[in-house]
Length: 390
Image (spheres, rainbow, N blue to C red):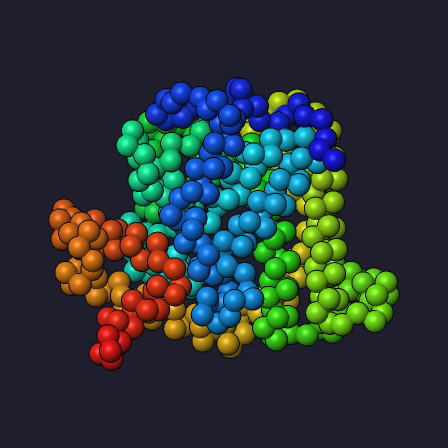
């Protein structure tokens, strides 16, 4: 059941507003309106064929960034409700957090970082911010989505203060935006944004276990010695001794999500009571995260992540996919910069009209970052294989 509203929850009635003033909605709070605007973006729809570990064409049983974002949003709403926070704000930040990811997961991001190294850099968090403040053009009165201050703060700072990042070339867009609409980049974000960040950790750790087993990269028996998931597997098998491996896996993942959510709620409650936080501004000035795992859970999770790193993220099959993905993006990037006339007319015209090499590269980067896995594969095939048009 939802808890009574916490004293340190964000209050939509006290929102710092939007960069471009708008009339209030008659039916939705500002944070609910932000959530709805995010859901209706082209960038959100394209998450359905963007992946994190596996490439979309490898099968339809693995998570995409869309299904991941929905899982993060569900977990964030549950935690926010249990803590008495604003669930709409937590959900909005959760749904937005992956909008800037390019195709092919971290391999795609790594390649765009390499391609943009001499042209201002690339960072998926900054790209997410640019999507919601600039690249999405859906409204005649303003660029981007004109989200509330609190949602933008969460998009930028959900993992903590970012003032130390502002010297990086890739963060220039946020530095410039901050001059006209300051986001207090040196402080911590609201508790709702922190909930979205930790919900992301919960979701990806659990679905990577699920997807890794589904892909056959490791077996259930290999998880028995891994802290957290091992004891949960033992308890699931004790309670359901005749269950097949598929349902055993799903029951274990369900229980692991519950254990992690319960740990966050307990640890966050403990920290709030110990620090005597009584307002959202207390949370922003606390000097450390309020929403967190316990030390014991953090230790167990570090060992689980190491297992996944060794057995999944660096598996030869995954490495092969990452290698293919990097080559696809590198070859398309070089071609689009050198021959923008091969781009469709709206993007090609923008590249050809850019005032500098860096500006040309940024437009090409934006175009590629917006691609889905499937579209990038098909576009590369059409550009580099003569038989692709037959």
